Length: 485
Image 1: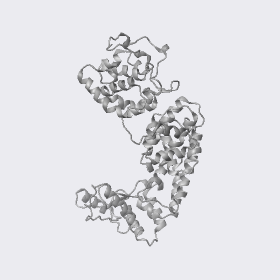
Image 2: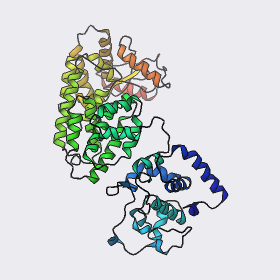
Image 3: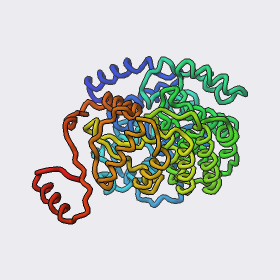
Image 4: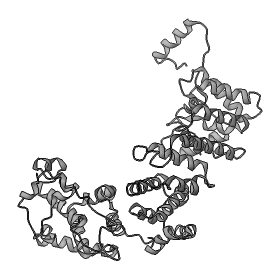
């Protein structure tokens, strides 16, 4: 495609500079024609590289017969005879492909449709379509391991990065073909190659049952340990889900997907929090893959969610968490997608009746965004206790006769807040409640906007039975004379 792209010395110089720059990041085995044609595409249509990187499985899906990533062809019987490209005289080189042969370019077969596709000119659209066909169509006869259509070569070119810690081909193959997966996985993780694994899985295609099961085992382990290896858990699940969708497309009748997940993850000693998070992910992504596609159903997931939440509660007994750790309540939200909230609420209330209530109090108070001495009870308590008033009564019932200065302080705060009917924030200085003060300090470190402008402010709370007093205070409040709740 040299003649299509290179027309003067300036464009030739750009090409040479790009080739020199990219040479060191070339895959070990890559057809030189593919490399040149891909470079033309990158120089002229850089946005196309970004688009392909995010949508390659739709644009150039895995062909189960050739085992390469190729453009999908249309059925000749569907040809309506309206082939705009057949009448074009756009021939800058000796080769003109059959544009109407592929689904991606079939939409270009009527002239009126071209301007709707993007902001490119007609000739630019044709050149882009031609380049994609030359690279990913049947016309590209490069051998499997040297072709850009081979998964690993495509991955490196699209991601456009050199990774000094990249996992080798042999290590990657061992990871999914060895009888001892854990040993090989430990080896690559110790070298900090988790991102390299994820990059490869993103472009990995296979129809072999053993390899698919190995990918499932590896990805579930990486998901459960994502934070340990400084990877966002959702990234792992997204790549895993995309792999399963590709696999399911080629193997719609497999019957080992959910069994493998249960045997190697759900029924193993991984954390209940992460298991609930995984179930929540399945619920959130039902439009992409239904429960049935995962070979399970809502009833089974409801049983599992309740089981894992009960295990989580048992694991937390007498071993409470950090005041800034809200994973317990995140797990509650995950389980609530499958289990009736009343069942979960009763479990949580029973739990706190037997545990150190100070942590609950500290986590259920919500500081104002711009001040470190203005608070309210979090709206989250309404989900569990139905109302803030019921929550207040629950706390008072448990610790009404407490000798703890911290809890006495908190009861005082709840009493004052109740005077406002929980409609307003309350200025309050927690002198003794260390857990609340710890939350304040951490918030101050994260947000420099927090100020202490209300440190010297005074709030007055008036309890009355005469409606005339209410009228007076309402009038004065509106005039800005005083602030009364």
